[in-house]
Image (cartoon, rainbow, N blue to C red; front, side, top):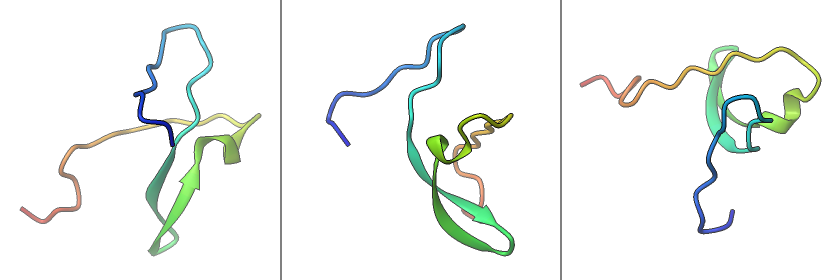
Length: 52
């Protein structure tokens, strides 16, 4: 990934990114582009699953 941060803009296509996700009982790496053409809801919770 490049060193410049990508910015999401209202009304524009979301920038592609890769992240760890909890899927079917385990973690796996996913990319937003894996879901191209499908409806996607993104939720970000800073510190979630840290058990603090």
